[in-house]
Image 1 (cartoon, rainbow, N blue to C red):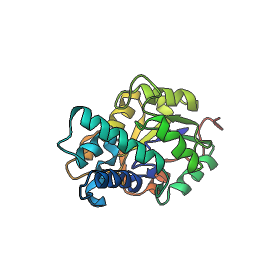
Image 2: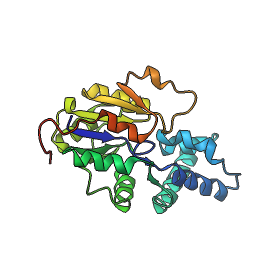
Image 3: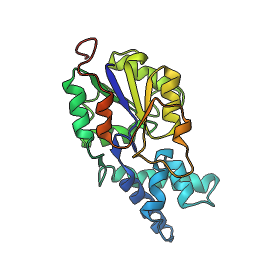
Length: 223
């Protein structure tokens, strides 16, 4: 194993507070009572369209498009208001790097949100690869972004471990030929059945990723 790849929202970073804040502001602007954080958190991994649908279930067509555009406008202005690495993830990244491995991100979040968030968190330049939802012609669960991440990180799929908190994450990783882990601490609601996703394992906390790391990268230092 040479490369650890992460989903972003709900796996590497806890971004739910800022996404909830954007929806909160949007609902307030439209004269609605904002949904509580607990009701929003587990929907975050499904993207902006799912969050707008959650907050405005009757919206459709041009009205929905306008709401989604405004949601993204608010969110892009508050990307790093409260978003943080999950507890223990800083130590995990350091452990990966100290063992001669590298790491990267494959997310369906568009690059205009992914890149500034990672830069503000001091992570962009540390990552061997950052693949956003609009980097390739296909998004997860298609394996195309996963395979580009392999290429950019200098590893084969068999040398990669992908960690995510959504079914499409595991589906994409498996389709690319990677080992996969479900981040059960992520944004998984009660209706989902991660045990049926076909992952190689499950972690309840980021530090458990270390149990999957070799003492040193088997093929030497990666670039």
